[in-house]
Image 1: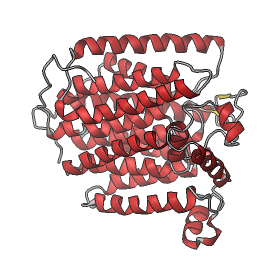
Image 2 (image 1 turned 135 degrees about the vertical axis):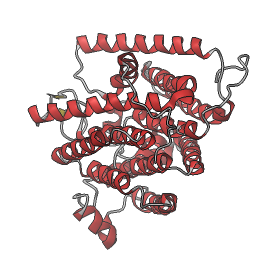
Image 3 (image 1 turned 45 degrees about the horizontal axis):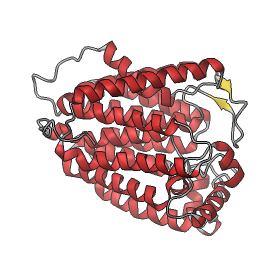
Image 4 (image 1 turned 180 degrees about the horizontal axis):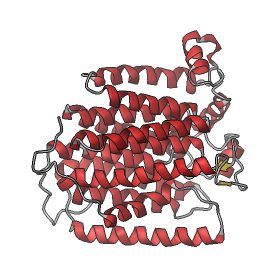
Length: 410
């Protein structure tokens, strides 16, 4: 059973213009490329295009916003504004990168307010088309170049320097997760595209397993498993609540204290035999301990968005390899609190909808959080997932009325 009416459940023609628009909004942040003079100027050009798109969307928006979405949007803006101001205040060589990231996220929210609230499934379809193309392209390139498309000779962090279409194997797993969430949700809503979904699952899982990303492999298996068993899992939020309790305990007792799992037999067995990591999480506990020491010295506002040089010097790695420690390092308790508020909004919104797409996305975000215990993923991709998850509410409330045009755009 789908959530489309009979008149809506028709074959959707592909709009190359819409796919191209989302390519401009998304691809600059998920496609990896070597740093050259040419790539520098291409990046600058894409940033100009992103700003132009922002100006056009702001003009089309006409200073309107949907009242019910106000708190969600304010929270996202507050997170980015605080990160930018904090970085400007603390980092001696401040660049405009974080402002560019904020504008990119703002573009997604403007697209959601203007178009997703009116025709969510059409836009989800085209986003899914874009990610499907990228996933198949990544599989094709991996078959041709299994050792990577290029080597990042300027990378001073630890880990392998070979780079694939989306960067390293962990980022490949993240983009695979985004693809399965977007296209899988479209199939549930429309009743179409199931063959492509199963092909995507096979492609994503095969590539992350071949690349050796155990964390991504477990995450993809969880999302794919729920998708295929969704009709039999009636109350996933009970499982998510239990997962949240375990998640918090794991962070407090293991990550924050930098504990080796030798004294925890059940967890040790899972990490060694399922994730195929050692009990120190491939030496991540040392990065966690170094990060915690820094956080304790500046717990309220952290240190701002820092580059790899600073991370290597202070954390002794390319980063803490944990989403929450990264949030605390960059923005302290302030940034962490805003992120927790944002995730609370998301899960409450999804739980209220009581439908399969909301359940699927809730499981997907929980899976992303699980993977983020051991990695710090691309912030743009994380916020992109969060924004889509929130605007799933448009399915149940498609006739939301915008506020008066005189209301200021937040």
